[in-house]
Length: 512
Image (cartoon, rainbow, N blue to C red; front, side, top):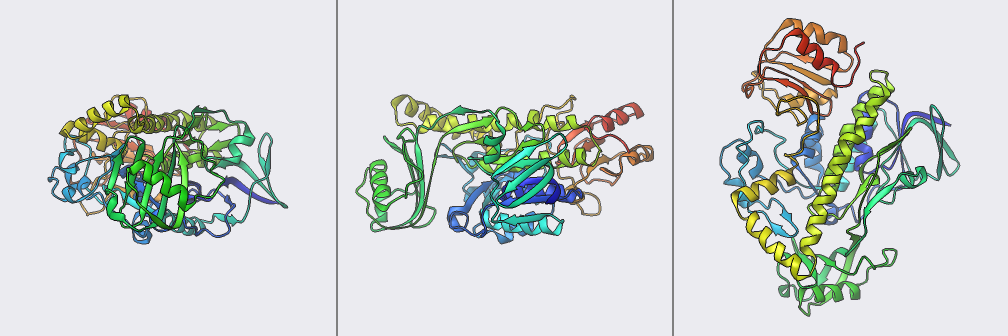
């Protein structure tokens, strides 16, 4: 029997990132992944491209993984305008970039203005883009192994038994034992179903298809997203890349093969042309089912990523929501395992992350409503199109797509509390993101008060004190930044002993 602190079912990007977070804290982790070969056509090339927003890029940057992932992905497309606009430097670069869409309605980068947010700072993590799943997983798996994580491929979880202080997992003839089990095993999660998590939401209205094909007469298709009387189709980027959303009530049997005849029929109906397909290289389907677990924890079983929430891939929020889960859960679970925090800290995983996924479900349902081929939806879509083409409208949708507007509901009045900390640049040219690679919390003290450092020393196992001088503090005197980059306390005035002691006691870790 193999023993670990944490067993993770599922070795996709969410499971591997969670394993990295735990391994960084010295927690022993076993990742059980059913695929023997990580390479699949659905994760490679264009089919594997996923939108990674600024919030997720910041998370990868804080762990020193961003450069590797960018260089490994096959087709990175940077949202060039986001950094320059956020810094108030204009948006000329953004005019050349496609920065996202809402229900197939593209955002005009010239209309996006983020400079009114005083806490957005230009820097290496202020660009999102399209990243390749295979490349992301390759980098994360290598990093996990460097941190001592055991990744076991070709292993399918058959059942598990939960006891008071451990979980025993059975996979064929293999038996694994852990203190905790985390289901990161996708939308059809075995862990979620076997543990009896309640999974609620809305059923499918359409079936979507994405494919790489050969087209005899591609000139008949309009490039980009196209809303039609039957649903929506998209052509590109590049030749032979198509997507179709067909409002069939989700009736397509996804266990059946996706044939050339089916794709041609659906593409013709949705495009209103007699376009001819001559070959299908790879194809996949999805629906707009939108559901999430009522809670993400049942005793020693936890859920993250698609195992906790499913929705259609409209606007590319799925991977981003899963990355947020892993970053939030990792430091909390490791702190509980190491005795640095009470068990109740894990309950905040649900209270903080459940609303995030709930928002994602609403965001995608709203897009389905606009795409629905009925007059009422088409009327609303025309109004949204007008709103998106205004400066305020484009900025609003960009903030949502980039993940810049999300804020956890944490105690305190400062506007930074609950948000990701700005990536301050220090006098020596280093940045806050580099300081966060250790995975520890940081007490950022711009007052350079020695007594604050002394108070922080009792939390040295999980918190670092920084009294470095920043080039631009945005008026902030001091702040506590959790390991996930979220500000739990901040002050624009010189804090006293009582404030600092309260800030140190309020973010979830006990001294010692």
